[in-house]
Image 1 (cartoon, rainbow over the protein chains, first blue to last red):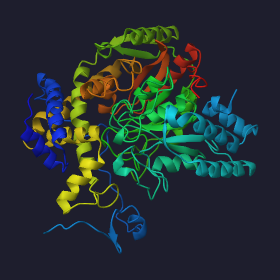
Image 2 (image 1 turned 60 degrees about the vertical axis):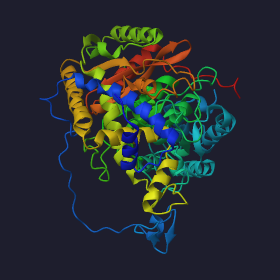
Image 3 (image 1 turned 135 degrees about the vertical axis):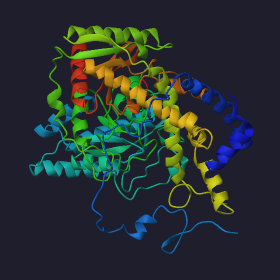
Image 4 (image 1 turned 90 degrees about the horizontal axis):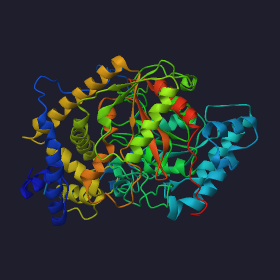
Length: 95
Length: 490
């Protein structure tokens, strides 16, 4: 299975991964090899088989909708790379 | 006999009788870690001596006050993807190198409540993706067996090596496709992946949420039963955790296997399996037969497809789970981001290592428009077939026995250039995760001086049966395998 350089770049864009030229070249070769191997699943006819949704017999788990105390803002922001007052600070979203 | 030679249950008996204190025991481990970890085994990413001694002294005070708890005063190591409040939790990734959790995982809370003492956090493949612990962003962990030139397996390689090197009496690992059982096998210790939902995943840093499960790595099967009982149980904070009573697992260790039906799947004796491994597994089967178990051949016909299905499903889930690392709320953040989009590319491109990026790419591809049905949905259909294989097998058998890994521990660097060869390490463990079943690896012998693991696979919530089979086997084999003597290396 041959994955093109354009496909690698497209998937990296979807995943928001910045890759170097070397990484793109290596991934093009590796993804082709790995996905080529994974294509062995085509040998099985699964047209009548339902896909697995979950492996344990659980239906939708509900809980009471009760108000609870939130964590202190200072704790939430403790690991923030950048902050301004009680907010996370992000780079410009709109130019 | 040194204090670090004791099993968890032996150490607890000494603590209860008052012949040793938790502080003495904890110091013995911290001293050994000091001598043998950095530059040698390298099982720990972070050692927490001050916290450990504080917790040990608190445990001793509780004991003096007449209290007891299942693990009161017993040291432990946690894989560095289990959240520990106030203690750096890195996932062995540059992305989380400075991350300090603001709360404990449910499993951490349960272990603390049972009286356990934290020695430190163990090394792993970055974000639990790998089979050798070579994908740690910091350093590889070395297998204590042989001449320290081999991998401990992975991804819980630090947790397995810590127990094998007597740097902890027990540890916690996580298993998404074999990441507890395979390193346990390669390091000659016991490791169990419980049934999906048996142990709360709240506070376990997610890799593939439909497959991840936490479990113990221990010196012997009785210790495994002890720890499993402490960590199992329903948690309202994990809606996939099972609301089923937790049995007394130690009571299941009867030593008797008369009439227990064990299936041997021919598909697990794969091409590329080392002859020494196969011989050791065959000898284990004879031992089990000698104990009165009824051994029969069973077919799990879709096993061949498990690896391919797993390496589509797990990366797909990983690509979704790891989307949260955006450089905004926590974790590494590129300081030179020109705008939001540029920040994402730079943060994720630099923060993640090679294997993590490869899995994110594979998963994103398998979920992308035009490939979703051919890869992701197809893999989930194969998952159904694999689960049906097990369902049919368990109509005739109480448990399934197989090798844990087709090989013994390999040399560091031997497979790092070939991702597909690395993925093949998990061929015998992956189907168990796909079906959500419990599995245990128990040492069954040595091949070329390196440990071989016997895998026992059970029905959902069949941990008692697994432990019973593994324990009876271990006793018949002559007790746990002697751990390597690292004196020559120190």
